[in-house]
Length: 276
Image: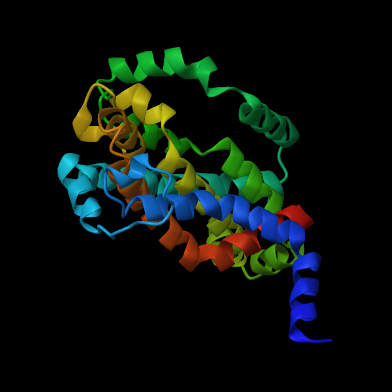
């Protein structure tokens, strides 16, 4: 069998995977090429830039305060993720490893909260934060994470139930309390699950548009990148080269983060799905 036959056999065996990869990568490649075109060329049917213009990226920064938007988004995503981990891990531990009255009912309520559309609680929550004087900032999106997140608690609980109880019994025999058992035994063993939950929360905060639009639309100083990018597109909708450059810049931090943390993320999602 020659190399051509091997290649055709490889394509035939992985046809579905190759088709899916092309389907997901094609928009990103098109975005990348458009970001280096001139304004006139973006209105033609040419797919490849006639001349490359990396200055489009500098011009995108000059047209809008993208650095401030990215900084606000990092503040929102990092604090919300840290607060979620600090509050959700103990909650998941209590729901998976401790026996107490009402545990199953609490778990059912958490699952119900996951199904609750966010629009249902929008009005009372907005009135509460408005009375507290925090609208116009990102704090109404960050502070609730101190009370945990329903999806993250559910995900972490599914991971923690896979850890054998013998490890906890051994720690308790050695005199460790519940907090020490949690920090010294559970957290090190649950690092893939915690990493997966943290990355889900970070990606959600990074791409969140509804929350920042609701609480910060009146104060442009607090806009996140999703809100700023929507405004950028509305102001420069015919300048596709600048819109493409700005869009690609907002994707870079998330892609870099996923590249470095993909092993822990995939391991956490896989173990949670298989054993949960």
